[in-house]
Length: 258
Ligand SMILES: [Fe+2]
Ligand SMILES: [Fe+2]
Image (cartoon, rainbow, N blue to C red; front, side, top):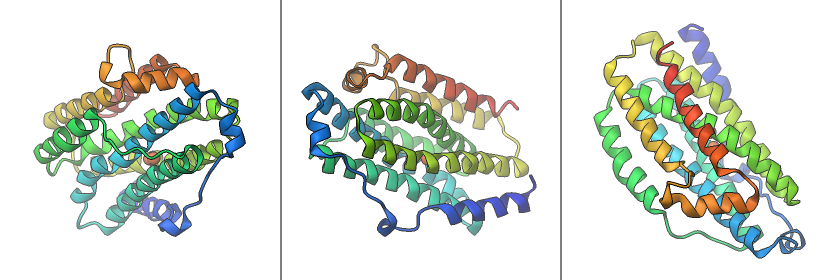
């Protein structure tokens, strides 16, 4: 696709994103359904879904350096803003669901969130100024990883009779499919103008390694022990999810070699 065709696509994608908080549907499951679950499962669902909300909210931090690069290109800037806004809405949807269904509100941020998103990420963003490729690819990594995770999450939600949650995940997945096309096209657009160089490669690798630390649910990542246990209680294999994380990072990294 050439530049004009890509811009048309971005206009189209922006048009399809949700416009405001007032469009936000609310998803909930009844107390009867929730009370039929074991105590362990109830705990696991509310903790895991709260972590999902945190990850959705932090995607904005990764999108920001890309959006800043396109400050003078309104079509791209608008698309990236609509994408960031969708992620914010996703976080709100999950938070709202957990609050309404499980009467739970997460208040503490995890240590990894504080280390990665408050310190390491701004540091890398500063270093990679005027280099949108590492961050655009990091967003693509999130999108691919999320598609595996949401598929498993949705299956287990259906097993536990959480129909409201299934509908919520389906709504989010619809957005994520659009994001995947959008962010791949952003990478394509950047490549039309600029060749990927050594610094792009090194920065992308560092950034992906950092995000893999965040989504590592293996038994060795003790800082993510609680997330691992929640997944197991719900019936999701954390090692499968972890493998898909690594696979997604590899796939995304290989796009630079193409
Ligand atoms: Fe999302
Ligand atoms: Fe997304």
